[in-house]
Amino acid sequence: MFKDREKLLYAFTEQRAALTRFLARRLGCAALAEDLAQETWLRLAGRETAGIGNPRAYLFRIASNLAFDHQRHAGLGVEVEADAATVDAIADPKPTPEAEALQRSELARLLREVDNLPPRCREVFMLAKFEELSYAEIASRLGIAKNTVMVHMVKALATLERCMGDDASERDR
Image 1 (cartoon, rainbow, N blue to C red):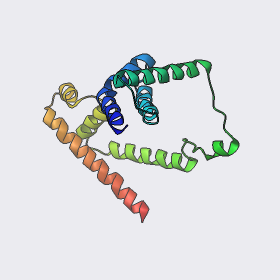
Image 2 (cartoon, rainbow, N blue to C red):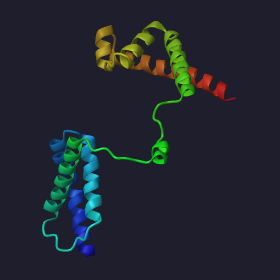
Image 3 (cartoon, rainbow, N blue to C red):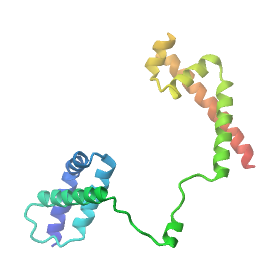
């Protein structure tokens, strides 16, 4: 029995990437494929393992069945009913009004600090963080060396960290 479980664990470990790719192709979602690959192991670990001749095929059969079950349930629009106490116990992912106000305030403060950066430093920072350009692209656009871009970014990040950190430590007092 222990030897059979070891063979299955070995097969799962060896085949996990292939199993996940198989599920991702079938389901069209990498995150769901990861979840179902893990569910495959959980199903396998909870079953009697004696007499499994081809562990790889057995793994893929379980995964295939899980994918089929998922697609069938998704196609039917199956919903789970829960009592009021269970629903009330689920945390609301939406931030509280206080948290939203604090986040808006922090963002406004960050934008003010970005405006206070030296012009070239601010320009490099904005291109990197808001336009998501690489350092090489920024260097090419501004006609400066890539190392100069890096120097400006380090200066911008250090200045912003210092400014934002100073205000946060003063607020905590």
